[in-house]
Image (cartoon, rainbow, N blue to C red; front, side, top):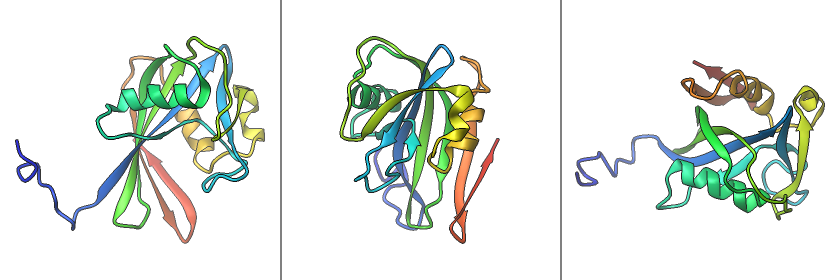
Length: 166
């Protein structure tokens, strides 16, 4: 099937930038990254690992690459927990695939993205988190491996973060 048969390019339709977000766990801890102070987005805030999907990668390959690049860990056991569309009020939005996984092999290494920290799941609420994590993390960790993923949507009204999950 050609691009035209796929409906591309149609500029009047909403388009997405693909991203991945990953929460690795070991015991009762989650690996989070505290954004570097000089980051353009979420400086000094805690987030999961992740980033953009590169051309030619599958969503899972992107998640595995991002984990390795940001943490040095490999052979992680990842599973899809959520897909979240994010309305940025621009022509291009974001679609984020959220994975959860058990930490694999390797030594943690720092990256330019920020500093890594194993955080007790019970203590996460006390951290300065990226705005969606207080609602996303409980959703992701309510699932067992093999269960159907959650479908979410984020948007903003007057600069207020809004969300829904189904």
